[in-house]
Length: 626
Image 1: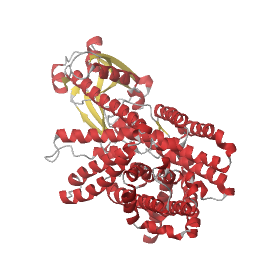
Image 2: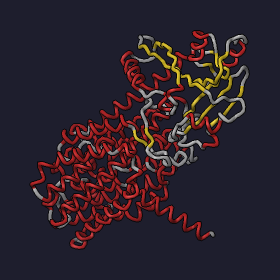
Image 3: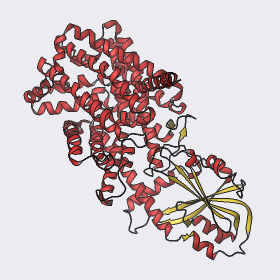
Image 4: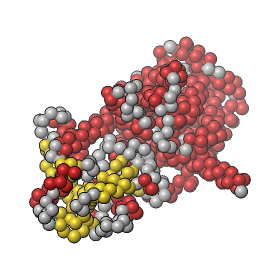
C-alpha cells in the first residue's frame, strides 16, 4: 500500500516536472538563440580565445548564481501559500511591527509595484525577440528567406495571440515533450562542437571571467548587458511556481534544462574557438547545413511555447493585480474548469499583440530587440532581492548578518547586471522603462483614486446599528431578498439609502454582501462565506476570495447561504454605481483625477467580475466629486 502511494507521488512529481519544462523554462530555454551572439555585438570585444572563454565563464556562473542559487535555492522559499512572483512577494511584506513602520512598508510596496509594472514591458519584448530570433534561422539556411523573416514573424505572432482565447489547457500536454526534444537538441549540438574543441571546458573556471574584466575594462561591463540575456527568465520561473511547486521546477532544471543550456553554450564557444567568423549566428552555425531549416522550425515552436508561457504569466499577473486592488476591473475569462490560473484577458491580449508586432516592425532584427531586452528584468531582479531581504528578516526570522550576507551577495550580482544594462537605454532599453512608468502610473492612480472614492463615500454613510435603531418599523417591505453589495459591511451602503429615500420601501430581507479579496492566493471553499443574522430582516454575508480564486458570487451563495433557513432565493442584487466628477479639491492632481475617471468608466462592471446574473441586477447611481 505504501509502495503504491510512493509510486503515485513519483508519477505526479514526474508529470509536474514535465509540465514545468513546457511552461517555466521556455524563456530561459530559448536564450541560446541570441544571448551568446549578442555578447560580441557592435564589436565591443573581439571573438579571440581569451574573450570567448571569458564570456562563456560569465554565462556559466550567471546561470549557477542567479538561477540555481538565488531563485531555486533561496527566493522560491518565499512563497505566498505556494504562489510565487514579485506581486505575491510584495504581499508578504509585514503589515505591522516595529521593524517596518507604515511609511517603510508603503515604500516597499511601491517598489514592488514598480517591479511588477516593469514585467509588462518584458511581456511585450519576449514574444517579439523569441519568435524573430527563431525565424532568422531561415535566413541562415538560404538568403531567399531574408525578405520574408519579418512577415513570417508577424504572422506567427498574430496566430499566437489569436489562439489565446482557447486557453493553454488544450495544448499543455504537448508542451513538455516538445521542450524535452528542444533541450536534448541543444545539448547534442553543443556536445558535437565540444568534442572537436574540448579545451573550451576550461571556461568553467571563474578565473576566466575575472580575467575578462581585467583585460577589457569598461567594455567588459557593457558586455554584461548581453550576458544577462541568459537569465532573463528567472522572474518568470519564480512567478510560475504556483502552477507546479518548487520541487518539480528544481528537478526539471538540474536534470535537463541546466545541462542542455551549458552544453549548448560550451558548444557555441567551441565553435567560435575554431571559427571566429561564425559569431554572426553561432547557434545556427552549430548545426550542419542540412539541419538548419528543421532546427529553425523546432526553434520556432520552442519560442512560441516560451511566448505562450510569458503571455499566460502576464494574464495571471493582471488578474492578481485586479483582485488585490492594483488595477481596475478587467474582463476575465477562465479557460479551465479545474485550473484557477488559466485565464484569458481580451484587453491585455490584444494590447500585447499590437505591442509585439510594433516592436518587430520597429526594431526589425532580434539584435535590435536585444538592446531593449534586459533593462526591465534586471531592475525587477534588484527589487526582488530587496523584498526578499525584508521577508527573510520578518517572515523567516533570519538574523541581520545572515540576511545581509545572502542578499548582499545577490545584490552585487544584480547591480552589476543593472549597470551593464543601463547603457542599453538609448538604443531601445527606454521602451520597457516607458511601459513600466505608464503601468506604474496607472496602478498608483487607481489605488489613490479608489481611496479617495472610499473616503468621499464614507462621509455620507451610516453605521448599521444606528440605521436599525432609527428605522421606522412602519416602513413598507416588499417580498423577496435584496443583496446590497458593499465595500464596508459595517456601514449601510449608499445604494440602500438612495433606494429608501426615493422609494420609501425596503425588501423583506436585506443582505449586506461584502466580497473580501485577501492577500493569499486561495481561500478554501469551506471558509468562503460567513453569515451573520441581524434584526429587522437585516443580515450580513462576507465572501472571502484569494487573488488567484475564481470569483463566482451566485455559486458561493448557493452553496452556503440560500439553503439556510430564512433566506429567500428570489433575490435581487443591488449595485452602487459611482458617477465621478474631477474637481480641484485636495486629493490628486486634476490630470490624475481625469485619468482615474477614464479608468473607472472603462473598467469591467461588478456584474461581470462577480458573475452576477444580469437579469437580477439593479444599479443605483451616486454622484461623487473627487
